[in-house]
Length: 204
Image (cartoon, rainbow, N blue to C red; front, side, top):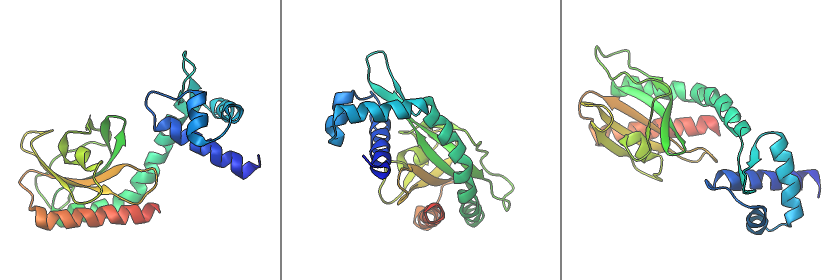
């Protein structure tokens, strides 16, 4: 197989492994990708050398630690692209704005901007985690349109609104705001969506 085809198949195998939490066997991977087992063995060996894939005791292919290292290196790039739209959003709404990524069953904040125009606002730390099924930011990760609202789910007295970042291949993220008072969704929702679209444009 030529180099381009090998790279394409290797990336497809890596995507298949990362999209399958329980791992895949060589036979399953060969069937899913429409190639021979020998091809999967060669691709898996190369990915294993770079720690992107590992073999568990049962022989299933699973995500390797190298992938997590790459993801951590990518987070500063995401934050850099997100900060200008988040800063504009925080000032326009007068609330703490954030970019949240999906990390397994958790939602993790990778960029946070607090408004400069308010005397009091919600403190939210980069690296904060919570289940994806709780809070506006977590639930928005699975949306394809619109926005999610939360009230006091993660922090008593805090009100949140978040919308998904759409159109960036491989990225599962949301943009949101957190305030100490109830948010006017018809006004704030479109502003959050605009920030999410600006971040998507910056990443594409």
